[in-house]
Image (cartoon, rainbow, N blue to C red; front, top):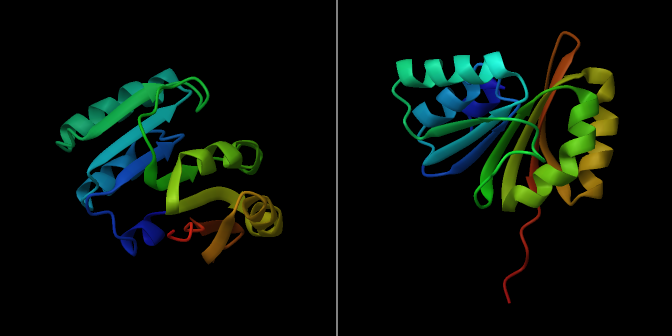
Amino acid sequence: MVKNMLSMDHRDKQVMDAGCGTAILSILASKLGAKEVQAFDIDEWSVENGNENTAINQCDNIRIQQGKITEVELDGKFDIILANINKNVLLDEIAIYTSYLNSAGLLLLSGFLTHDIPDMVREASRHGLKEISRDERETWASLLLQGEALPLR
């Protein structure tokens, strides 16, 4: 995730961090210039620790909530969505991520194995996302996907 994020332009972007854990990816997005980061996790300890970490790193543009994506309040659409969770959650929620993604926005997924890539790409394409790049390390994988921009009228 970090390797991919370092090659992405975060300046003045709206970012969602789904399943943020300790908020390390949220903090990186903030440090890379994100305008705002909205993050959430189902685990109470992760949310508490994430809030501590964002305070220590002086990232006042990060808001962390506890709950699932269907339970938290998210404002607006996002230019970048980060989701480092697991295959089953990602497959179940990719339609929801897409509904929050700006036209031509970026969705960075990880937390699944290399042999899961075809399933992930197939589900992403069902929701109008195209593969931009993939990264594999040992048996783990990540995918950078992009929404298809709507033609101007």
